[in-house]
Amino acid sequence: MAEIERVAVSFDGLEVNSYVVHAPEGEVIVDAGAEPERILERLRGEALAILVTHGHADHIGALEEVRRATGAPVYMHPADAEPAGVAGYGSLEDGRLLQLGGEGFRVLHTPGHSPGSVTFVVGEDQLVGDLILPGSVGRTDLPGASWEEIELSLRKVMSLWSERTRLYCGHGPVLSAARELETNPYLPPEVP
View 1 (cartoon, rainbow, N blue to C red):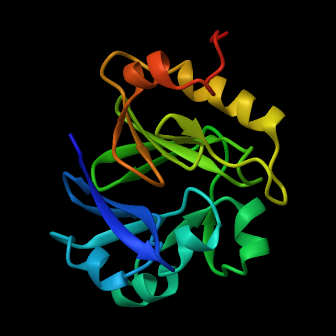
View 2 (view 1 turned 135 degrees about the horizontal axis):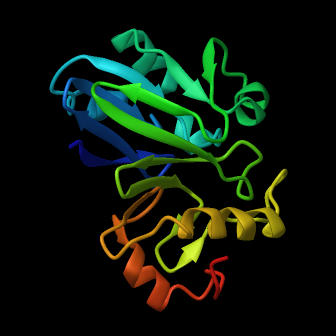
């Protein structure tokens, strides 16, 4: 079973989370946002891939430095990769299962905060980017964002939650899905 390590970094004074997933047979980096040296020092072995939840600058600010240092391939949804100018990426599509280092990463396309936002499901846990934040959800007042889409995306990820599900979000601490269901006023009240 993979261990997901939160790495809090600073992008222009804004705290943002990067993650290193310590899979049984290697390392997977999620959202190389800033401070590449802090991300790289958390690696315990070979970096097998760099996954990107969405293409906002605070989530890809250190992407090229981390890619150069590790030689790892980058996986990103094309709806965000192309506008962000990220070249040479592996395309992520809804439902795709990436097998990396002996761990499965299921891709859910979860637009709303950005057109190419994705969530990675690892076991019962979810790396949600800025889809869900502590007591809130991602902004929908940005270009390409949509409240209608984010609500559909929320329902999609919520349908997979259990009492044990942890949410690894783009900003703030790791969240308990059960606790967010009780306290987050932005989550839809019913899951289809």
